[in-house]
Image (cartoon, rainbow, N blue to C red; front, side, top):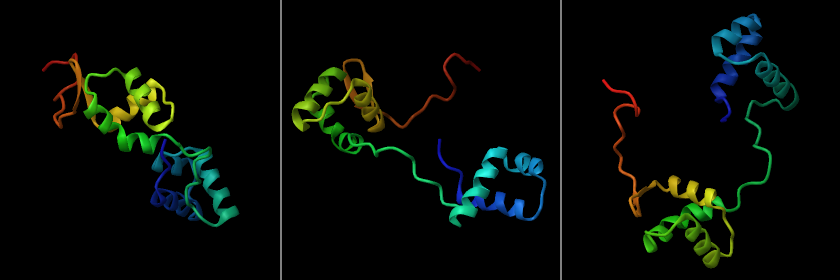
Length: 133
């Protein structure tokens, strides 16, 4: 989930500073009471409303994989996900799971068509599957 915008954070705290009731702020901005408390605490402790960094280590495989996955697909268009994982490990020395490889392929905008991977077209279905007009 992404952090709320700076503008929304400022408007929520401006409403609190103006003395509006918390319930009215919750309904107006669609934020929880805990969010209001968190913003007040953060402003009191740090003096800023910048979103805090996401905890944990930054991903180490994703950027390199996304940058070079299209080369793999173009060289071996008929390979399976497991084959791509093995090829990646042989070329770069980094082991990736089939699910990680699948996410990287989807993010590179490739889709599986019959026996090989193709760049996805920009057209979308006009309606969800199962619904008819």
